[in-house]
Amino acid sequence: MDHWYRVAKRATWSSFPDVKQSFNTADFVAPNIVFDIGGNKYRLIAEMNFARKVLFIRRIMTHKEYMKGWKA
Image (tube, rainbow, N blue to C red):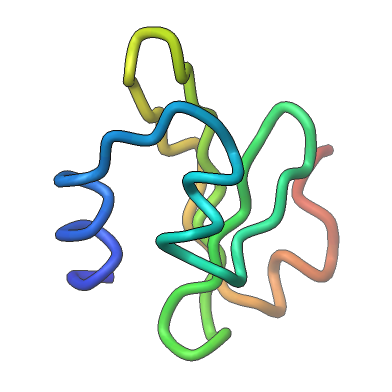
């Protein structure tokens, strides 16, 4: 989590492909970006406003919780 935070804090992402360059396992699940954290043990769900350069963390959960469904 610390590594993700340090990279995200310094990032100047302007699109999802920029995010993929920093985190190649990130997935776009509209309107969110799903990051694999801790060797795939956790998921960080975020929404990114690229125009304003603002990232909103929506949820942090275990891989098991994520697989149960998180959009409900």
